[in-house]
Image (cartoon, rainbow, N blue to C red):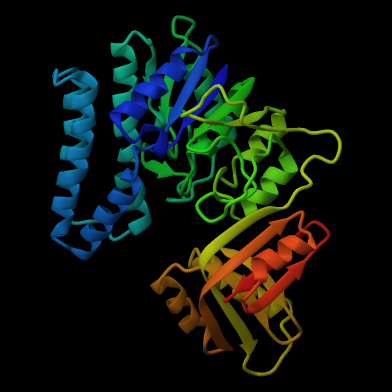
Length: 417
């Protein structure tokens, strides 16, 4: 069994779906195809959901735009013929419309998963139907039927044993060689939709590979492989032909966008290689992530996380920042679901670099003010250089103010103004 994963960029149009079909049809092995929502559909559904909670009438127009985008793709793929998938797609949009006309439960995370998970259902229904229409015979399998999770909405944890039992049932049909299923989404034992966290489709592919002991996973991207820097931000980048599992985990943790941070570990546990390849040039070898021998990656790799906040906390009673204070601080960040990208502390203060989640972080700072003096800097960059050298450090810090620096043997990190 081989697992293919197609992200939103690789299925953003009728032409890209036709290209995905060519890639799938050239595979001679049993195959599960994991598909993300088309293009920027997840963003669009998030905006509609936000409009629903704010009772913004623009939500109806935004939903109409999303429906039109999907029906345009249907028309291009099927030449205007009203194949059965049209009714399935329209039915999903009708459910979404009825939802945003109604009164929500007040539980944003729960409603998020029920609403936004529709993006992957739409994309996989269309992709599966199109594949069948061109004789790439496949079966659609609802991810909620095999990926069983807990009820931590928007960041669900996998119930591995139950998911394994269900996956082996759903994907064990000898009469079918190709299956299509959703990325990013799962379901509880009570039938409620859940999601695995933003960009979680890579993780879905890794979960499937682990559960079914697949021979490999190929993630199809709009880049030729894993690069030493984001081509949108840097020139002179190089492609890495291979990475160790350890380096891939480190890079994803630091913010490299090519692979979801949770993806690598399920593959490492079963020693399953992960390939990152270009959907535009599928014959290019790409990057393989596997167990390497020897030094492996030794050239600098640059990662930038933009729009960061550096929050500094000092106890008002001038006490030390010790276990009790640290426990209180991290519990507050956890309750507010704010992820910390970098931590540095001294005896009397602690600084935390975080993504800017808007009003949430300012609400958190207000919660901390009774016990801590709170300072912050915004509009910062968190820069990480893995396998740094003097030239790489100079390149990243020239002309910038360094607010915080951390250095280990292989990695250097800066918070820059």
